[in-house]
Picture 1 (cartoon, rainbow, N blue to C red):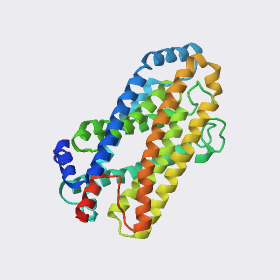
Picture 2: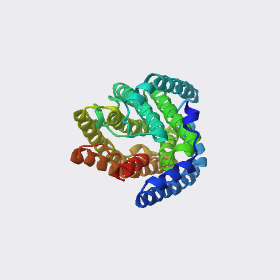
Picture 3: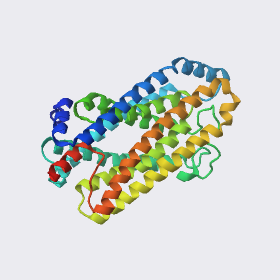
Picture 4: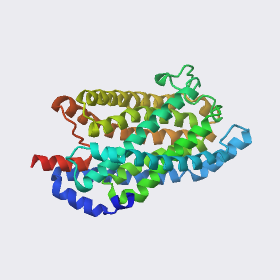
Length: 351
């Protein structure tokens, strides 16, 4: 089924878009994609310069006999990749027909098939992000690097005990399962995204940033940063996935209002308020880095740089999210100005 859905080429979609999207929207879309494309290659080039430094950093950890990642724990990522693929297929089998029957009839033809696939994914994401957030809170909330803004009970500093790896037995398991989820998403995008995704470079940059942050935070013993970033994202992504799902297949407007209120609040709190606080905290207060500055300074530059680029994408998405929220509460209807294909449908209805 998936192969049949992904068969049409990206060029065909662009031609359809030119026929049904206003020129202004098409120009804006192309402009954003160009920015994300060049941003992706810029990030790729910059992080490639860290190849030698990560070797030197690992040697530094070995010489100082500091705790570091055990590469045998990669087994959890391999297990995670298998489990995530299997559970996604099970989820698709269980909910596909329900979503197809519940989806608004305004979606037709190829647009309908793509929308069904997105909603099926959002349903899976709702369960995954909820479980991941609950697990992280339960096993990490008492750590001295887990922020009070997320329910931490014993916070001291984000980089507590650096350059040691965080001394919690659940860190490798949690980190590799999360890595498998992001690697799986990146691989799917690279395999199928060029054929169906009009925002390919935008999503590629985001997935690449996520995987890069996980990789480099593992190499640089900065898992505490990575876990905080993951929890910040997963918490708001749960509400986002559920809200987008219900907006398309739900019938109760009150629940739509409540779910989008939860999206706005959780997103603005975690990604626009707490996230930059954590970036500032790492930049201004890092005694572990200062102690071995010549050996660890590039790790600081790497982690902060990736987080700042990611925060820039948060600002970009926040603009669209606020527009969707304004549309729901002012016009009383769900109009997703972020999804270009839904803009096509709105344009048809206006005509």
